[in-house]
Length: 222
Image 1 (spheres, rainbow, N blue to C red):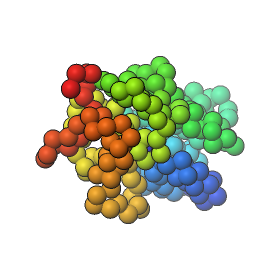
Image 2 (cartoon, rainbow, N blue to C red; image 1 turned 90 degrees about the vertical axis):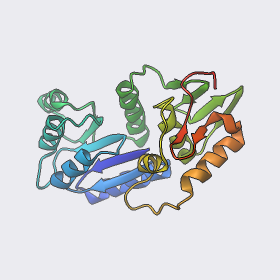
Image 3 (tube, rainbow, N blue to C red; image 1 turned 60 degrees about the horizontal axis):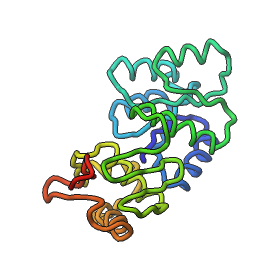
């Protein structure tokens, strides 16, 4: 999963980046509101973590402008502004949730999962895609009677496919969802991830069509 972090405090930003990367999440970190808005509108991120007190452009304006431009990416606000009117204003402008600083990384991850579930119309941490079941809280995948806990990047691959069952995703589309701006991506990185997933569950868990990409079938019939 790829996350956009818009945070100007170098200590908070670095700590968050390290904590998320340690959990297999790719982080694109920008440090001012103007650059942040450009990054939000460029797209490709699963969720935006947005600070409010930003240089060049306040976080509230970033949120307002992003929503006005039609951006639907979920936004989770990270802020020390705990006044009720600030929370109401952010939610009314299109924020999906708030986390007040200081916060525990596990709470942040839980809120990120909750926001993403709502964004995809889910009510629980379990996602069903045809014959494949994903537990997003524990990184467990079940297929054909086998349940395994996957490493973060393999799970991120499965999540990207499971969110769009029956739809082919190309290598470029998968790379965009799995890797951040500064990461060096080997030309066969996606192929390697698919190889390891198939090794655990069998080749039928992921279908491919040369020239189109890979998919998880929408129904259990393949």
